[in-house]
Structures are given as C-alpha cells and as structure tokens.
Image (cartoon, rainbow over all chains, first blue to last red; front, side, top):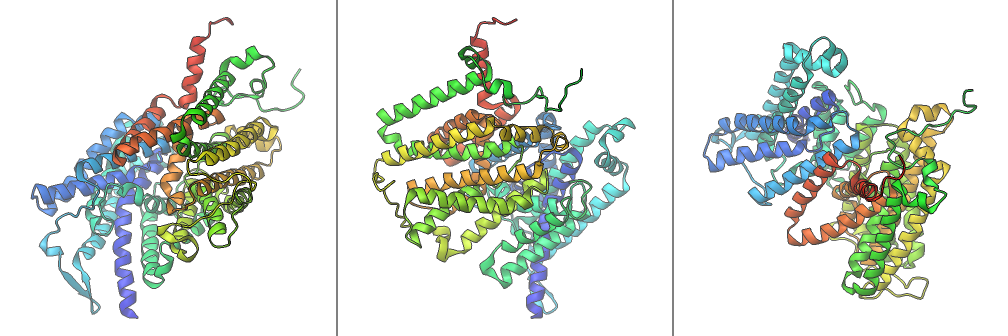
Amino acid sequence: MITAALTILFHGLAFAMVLYIVSVGLGITMGLMNFANLAHGAFAAAGGYVVVVATRSLGLPFWVALPAAFVVVALAGAVVERLVVRTLYGADELRQVLFSIALLFMAIAGFTAAFGPLQQQPEIPAALSGQIALGGVEFPSYRAFVIAAGVVILAALWLLIGRTRIGMRIRAAVDNRNMAEAIGVDTRMLFTLTFALGTGIAGLGGGIGADVLSITPTYGQEYLVLFLIVVAVGGLGSIFGPFLAALCIGVVDVAGKYLIPEFGAFFIYGVVIAILLAKPAGLFGVRS
Amino acid sequence: MPRPTVRVEPVKRLSVPHPGAAAPSTWRGLAMGRTGSDLAIAILLGLGALATLAFGESYWLLGSQVAITMIFALSVDLLVGFAGIVTLGHAVFFGVGAYSVGIASVRLGWTEPLLGLLLAAAVAALLGAATGVLVLRTRGLGQLMLTMAFASMVYEIANRAKPLTGGADGLQGMVVSPILGLFDFDIFGLTAFLYTLAVLAAVVVFAVLMTRSPYGRSLVGIRENRVRMQAIGTGVQKRLLSVYTLSAALAGIAGALLAQTSQFVGLNVLHFSLSGEILIIVALGGAGRLWGALLGAVVFTLFKDRLSALDPAYWYFWLGLLLAVIVLFAPKGLIGLVDRLLAAGRPKETA
C-alpha cells in the first residue's frame, strides 16, 4: 500500500517535472505576447535531438549536452521570433494557431528526414543510470535527477522573473504592455528574449525528459495537449501556476494509469475540464 | 436626422459579403466582386464533379472522400469563419457521427443509410449541445483548450471501449443497406460518389440559405462585435450554442458518410490531426466564405492524395509550408486570390 503510494508519487513527480520544464516557457510567452504557439513542443523535441546528437554522435558528456540544448534551441527560437512570429503579434487567434501548426508540421517532417521515425534515446551518465532506495523502495536515480532539475528550474525562474530587472520588465509587460512601453521598456527586445528563453527551457526539458516523454518526430504533436493543459490550468504568464498544474496532472495521470489502467488518460481530461470551468483563467492566471 | 433604429453597420474588414451584396439584383452585379468568385468556384466545382462522373471512373472513391471533406469543412467554416469560435477538436463530432452509424450497423443491425445519417446528426448534435454549453462559457485559449480536452477525452473513451468500438483495431464488418432500398453500394464507388454528392448538395443549399438569413448575419455580427450585438438585444450565447450544435450535426453527417462509404471506422476519425487538418482546409480556402471552404477541401484532399502517396513525411513538410505561406501572404485564402484574379480581369468601368 505504502509502496504503491510511493511509486505513484515518485513517478508522478518525475512526469510532472518534465511537463513543467517543457511547458513553463509556453505559459510565459503566451502571457506576455498573447501568441498561441502550438509549435512549442517542436522546440522541446529539437532540444531532445540536440542532446541525442551531442551524447551519441559527438561523444560529448551529458552535462555539456544539456546547456548546449538550451543555447541551440534558444537561438533557434530567437531567429523564428525575429523572422515570422513577430509579424503575427496582434493577429487574430486563428492565424496564430494555423501558423504555429504549420511550423509544427514542418518540424515533424524535418525531424523525420534527419533522424528517422523511430524513438531516439540520449546517452545517460553512469552516475544517473543506477537505482536509489527511498523509503525501502528502489527507484531509478535518473528520475530523481529529473525531479531535482524541475525544482532547480522553478527556483531559477523565480529568481530571474521575481528578482532581476529583466524579470521586472517581463512582469510589467505581462500586466500592462502599453504602460510598460510608455515608461520606456523596449518590448521588441523583451519579446525576442522571452521567446528565446521560453523555447530554450523547453529544449532543456526535451533533453532532460527524454526518458519520460520519448523523443520522436511527432513529439510536438503527441504531447501538445498535455503542454497546453498545463498552461491553461496553471494560468498564462505565471511561473508557479504551471508548476502546481503540472504536479496535479502528473500525479493524477500516473495514479489513474496505475490504479485503473482501463481508463487511461481519461482522468486528466476530466480534471482539466473541471478546473477550466471553475476558473477559466486557470489557477493563477493573470488573464485568460 | 439620426437613424431611427440602431443597426449593425457593415465593418470594413468584414470578410463575407454584407447583406446588400449577398442578394445582388442583376446578373451584372452577380458577376462582380465577391459573389462573382463564389459563382466561378461553384461552376468550376460543378464541372469537376460532372467530369469525374463521366470520365474519371478510377476517381469515384476519391471523389466521395472529397465530397465528405467538403461537408466537414462547411461545418467548421460556419463555426470558425462565421461565428468566430476557434475549435481544435471538431473531429470529435465527425468521429462520433462515424461511430454512431458504425456501431448501429455492426452491433444493432441498423443498416439503413439515410436513417443512419439522421442518427449520426442527432448523436453529434446532442454531444455538441452538451459540450457547447461548457465550451462557450470561455473564450480564447481556454476555449481552444476545452475543445481539445473534450476531443481527447472522447478519443480515449473510443480507444478503451473495445467491445463497442473495436478500439485500435477499428470497427469492422459494417453492412450498409441499399439507399432507399434501390441503390446498392457498388465496388467502383459510383453509388457512394452520387450519394455523397447528393448529401453535399443538400448541405451546401442549407448552408448558403442559413448564412444569408438574418440568423446567419447575426452570427457574423457576434464575431465582429459581441458587445454591440448584445446591446441591440441579440441572445448571443443562445445563438452561439445553436450554431455550435448545428455545426456538430453537420460534422456528424460527414463522419457518417465516411463510415458508410468505406464500411469501416477507425480511431483516426477522432484524432487531433483531423481537427487540425479541417481547420487548415478552412483557412486554406478562406475562412468565412462557404465557397472558399469548399474549394479548400477539394484542393487539400487532392494534394494530400498525390503527395502523401509519395511519402507521409514529405506531405507534412509541404502542408506546413503551404499553410505558412497562406497565413503570412494570403490571409484570405484561395478565394481571396480568386477575388483578386476576377477583379484584375474585369475592366474598371466604375470610377
């Protein structure tokens, strides 16, 4: 009984942290720029592929591959933002949704052409490939690392958004963009930076979470519903909201699949619908 | 003198013809401007259908697929283009329609096709009304999410309810009786093609009449300015719910047609990618224009048939590229290009 509860909690937490790391950037960019980016998952997949290539083909250590994934994907995000996303700020929702779907489809085709349709697994360092004992139960230590990484990223983002000047500008622009511009915040630059940061963290999440959400070309489409759920339930423009939403969804999903496997992912959707109906702006939403 | 009554003024960026243009009094008026594009596309599509009937024996099966996609596209255009409700889960109604006739045939032995269409429309409409009440409470991202969440939920149910739906293996062994007891489905797909064309024609007439009616105009009004429509006394929520239900029923009919003509129902009829594709089709053709959606459905289905035969991965790339180009450079879709073409070809007689 206790073993079951521990197992559910542990794997639920690991799943939740991957969901959080990938989705948090989406929530910030959506809250800041009102851009519905359905291609967000493709950036996460790109990060996963960077880690795969770095550890498998280039033989780089895992600890170098992770920052590389962040940097490469953040740069790609900045380029995409500068070239096209920028022209769609303020366009109607349908055009944004369609454009990001277009991006997603091209990414899927590109990943398939480059890496083939099968799942790719990064090389994990020996230190993380063993088991650790928690409360008398053995757990894979890599997943413990995933949980720790989620908490570290939450803390880092909290410091960045809550304690630095740039974070202050981001918060100001989320709350009231016109006002922020009026007092001299360069929102153009801020948008590019935030988009790059959001996609970069997603790339990091793709790399870290390859063990939980496997890296395939259709990654961005398969898990899109989950990422959007985390953001919509957590609230746009918030850092803690998606964290709680991811926790809730991760644990409920793992518990549901463990205890009543015949219902599958049914529970998640039930919970989401209930939350969105009670609070349309999400749990911690600045705006809906 | 101020106007005696408040009325909705046609907004400049309105992408559908305003009431004056919707009922041109002369043929000359009809040949000009937007209605001209509609007419041109209608003639083109009609000729295409006739040519396929007469000469394209090997395309009859594809033809019925095109007709089904056109019905589905119309249902989504009514919702997205006219009423301004963005949905990423409309496949749920298509799929529920398909499964309704499939399950009725395989599990209950109800094989009459026309009654099957009614059944599918009714089931999809019921689901549409039930989920619509909830979906329409929110707007923007929340709405998008709810449509996706409901669709994912139904997908999951269909996947798990193996005894009823056949799960991932699909629903096999569907039997469909001859239409009206007279026309049996043949192996070349001629009956299927004519049958889907007939249903398509009925749906098109219905949709055209509906969008030109005061009810249809009020939907455009809600899309353009909800607050003002509310202020002049329109029951906004009621109208949105009714169009949501109606659109669900039409999508259900399209799904039922697919099940009947292919005599198989698989989980793909409920999948997210179908919801995405149909939204793409509407945007490709031109959202808010019925003939645009119809043209988009034809172009898309033919392209898909050609390109995905080569390699599905290629198809995704070309689809993405096409969509990006449309969004960035031709936001009014193919019908917007037809508009421009006709305007360029016409001598400028009015200064």
